[in-house]
Image (cartoon, rainbow, N blue to C red; front, side):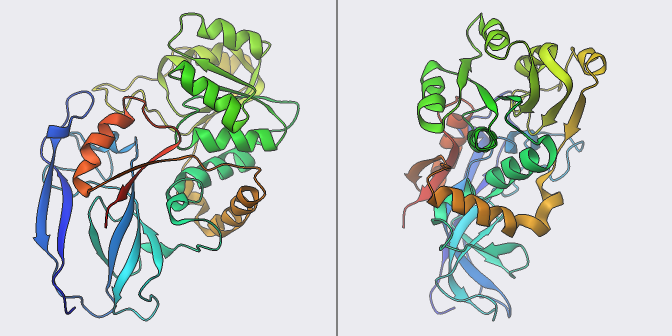
Length: 337
């Protein structure tokens, strides 16, 4: 490595109380050591902002992979290989990996995958072609199995996963209803993503509206939020319906995580509550990406990616904005060169 590279990375300085604040993070600058054999140096181009990160920022060993004080903040990046001592990777290739929130990353290549830019642009590899899109694809098509005779509720519908999941359910012919946090987002879900109905859960009559538009029957509840919205929705779960637990954003910042009170309706309606982890499908990612790319190019699917440009030290501000509901689709930090 002929040139000296100085990395900037985001570390945890304080365990957040409630929603995280900018002061809970710090920026550290350090020189990157020369590469070893089989190493590659990656310059980060895009950083994914993930709501589930908040679940790991706590002073508790109950959570696997938690971030401790002074640790690098976890996060997925898309970057460009700028120097390689690994025969499997060449300069100029774009790669995707969970390499942390930092300007430069060193990898042996075992923890990353190449981005096929013939399938989609680089930023989409953190949204529709990345974990959010893969999660929506497999959890719906393999587990929930939407069809024209089914009513589908997507909670957190304007988020990274929900914005893709609703579109896939529509492609399957289902009636699709989304819940979100503002009237503006409701309009966006209907006008831009093709949802049949969108409901602002902050309105007092949200559940009455949900009951009305679904004819008091939800065959699939695709839950990204947990909390009251999921709990109330269980009251109208359909016979042999499915509630898929994709995420619980309303609970990530809580000291005590609460489950549903209305679970008794699952028994009454012979319904099931199903967990889901995308990494169970790792050997089928290529299959999903080919189909997702095909739908994108045929303009049957959009991959909402909320890009914000800035330096790596903008991450704490954007992560705070994520929990204020400012994103439409996947929140992504695009790094300045």
